[in-house]
Image 1: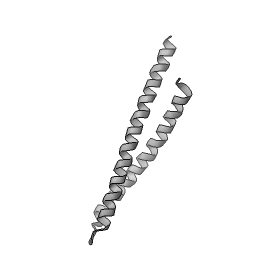
Image 2 (image 1 turned 90 degrees about the horizontal axis):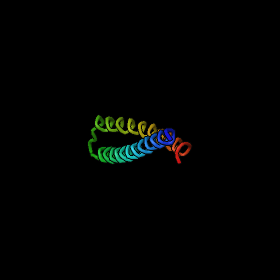
Image 3 (image 1 turned 135 degrees about the vertical axis):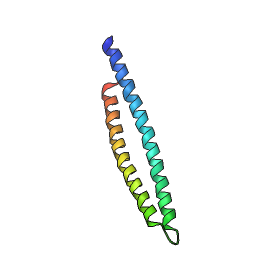
Image 4 (image 1 turned 30 degrees about the vertical axis):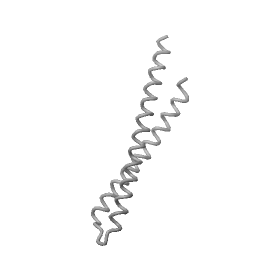
Length: 86
């Protein structure tokens, strides 16, 4: 009985982790899109602020790395759920 309860608790933690990762991935995707739009808008200006564009590009690159890491983590978590949870 303890094993079943421990397994259920483990599965609940995995499900919560997967849910949190999906939400974080969604936020990052929205932020990356917002940055793309801001960068495009700045580039359309007659005298674009190159420092601002570079800063936004760096922020976008950082978010893209985090997004990739979160997507791999989500895949691993979903695999663990499939393998271990009813």
